[in-house]
Image 1 (tube, rainbow, N blue to C red):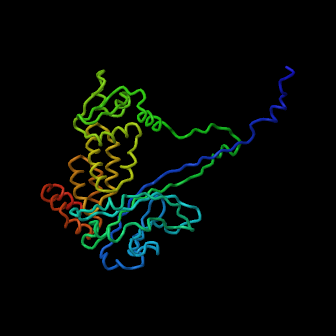
Image 2: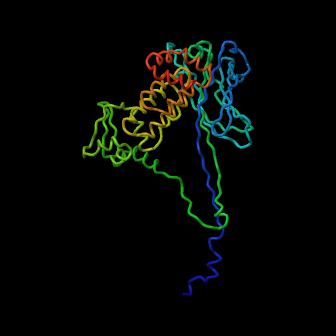
Image 3: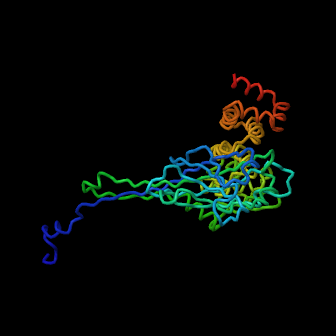
Length: 366
């Protein structure tokens, strides 16, 4: 008993007043398409061409295109494209972004994506430096040969992901109440690691005769009611013939991560459209409604004059009601855009093959 501290001693070394705070980082993505018509008129100009402002992550941005290069480093042989934050503050805003040129001439032997490689950049935008981007975006010779200047129009697409940060305080902590701080869920991280390691896999999914995936029977059964029915037996493998390997790999990623894989999440090119449509069809077939809507959302953000009709046709044929509405809204937003769309081959094909869509669009316009 002589070694036990007194009550007064315990009070002296008590917990006391504790405070805590939480720092949250979130990413918000967006895509802006900037069309520069009459490109040959400004080709030798040193003055930048600026896009209409657009908002991503609560901030306002613009794209600046320098037809003769942004500085002397280009030697007048390259074009420059920069992302600018309008009215930047002292606190830096972190953004990851990429630029690509929309290839408008499919017959061109040179791919704009091969020239540009869709490189991704990251910058801290503040009052000290409010614009970032590739000064040597593309050489003038490559741009001329890329097929991106059809009808003397250059279309630049910019994908932006803004990281927003928030620091919050718990008032209870400031009054001295001790609490246990719980970190964010790490379920999807752990499941993803389980898939990547191949540990304890108990089912093989064969895609035709070309590809095999090792997975966990319980995860597949929990995430897809169709796969659950296929897995009711004790077979060690199942064969799927109605989905290609690339699309199924995205389904598998979603089942473990509850999200799209990074390449599909960030990309914004024709390949994105094709893959998203294949995943939508597969997700619909295997009862994965949320994944289907995620891909619909992806397509709704990359609509343009040349692709909206084909995407509308796909949406109508695959029961994508929200995507279909987005296509109508994009087409009918202004008369000039609708006129441009009406001159595309996609619209003519849509008008010939899908009269019901044309009638529905006319009713919405009225």
